[in-house]
Length: 396
Image 1 (cartoon, rainbow, N blue to C red):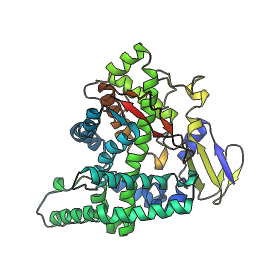
Image 2: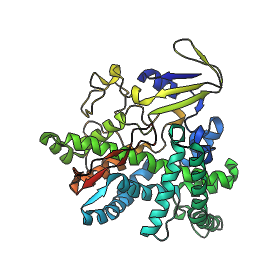
Image 3: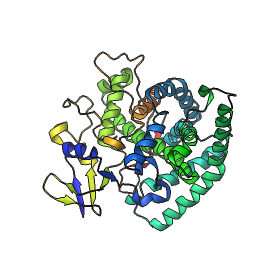
């Protein structure tokens, strides 16, 4: 039996129930099996604790201020010379660098061809996350993912792994100190491989998953956000606010995140009998579907204009502006502060506020005068039921 929840309050409470295990990615087991997002209980707790050592607030702030801004400029500059870009493709390139850095995947060449190869692999990995919602031949898609995983293993993962094993050995011998170890997920997994009981195959898939999760979701988040902003700045007053007030821009981003969660649904399966609010009992064979899109547009929480993009809406206490888009409970997004930044408070200083990479990227695009290409309208991706753009041409 499949049971759906669509109101915000019940959805949030359900996501926090520890007796419900992740079920959204069951179809994509070829890549997603045994990765963090699919683990449950103590195994999930132990691995998340290890990986959280990297994804701490100080890492996000360091990356945002010291690394990402430079990477962002380098990635955008070639498109500025052409005066145009496809926002979806540009987002892939920007966010690939980000996710490769904290995943632990080296790009020794940093050439155009190397980037194209890893982007092709990343796009195929993305099909694993959406395989449950795919409309095409799922066996063919699974085989495509399998081939890409092997290609990734040989060209990118194995050399990156070997380099980190050498660093770890030098650290054990006292030749380097801990601050000289790479700051990434792969290094932490290798250091804790025996403790966590990880096979080489699981480490490969976990690293692949981080490469995917960090880029794939943020790509579509950025594209949706820019579309909403392009609509908003048609009003001169709004254009001035969006371009002159970065904290207001961040609010616009958060509001878009609410309207367009990277996954429109979450899915769970009970590990023991689960009692719904209307008296039904769900068992291990049943599926619980949490409609995040509907919950994030619940008029009892977000008002009668819940379907509209309104960054100035008043929210009930405890309700984040992006709704449930980053989840709740044990499977809440581990990289939320990197993507969305810190929620601004009354009197937050724009000069040292942490905005998150989506807001920083949107700010830079607007500074360079990005606008939709009226002669080449955006195209919706019809390959899945997720409401994403497959192409979004812009001009600078």
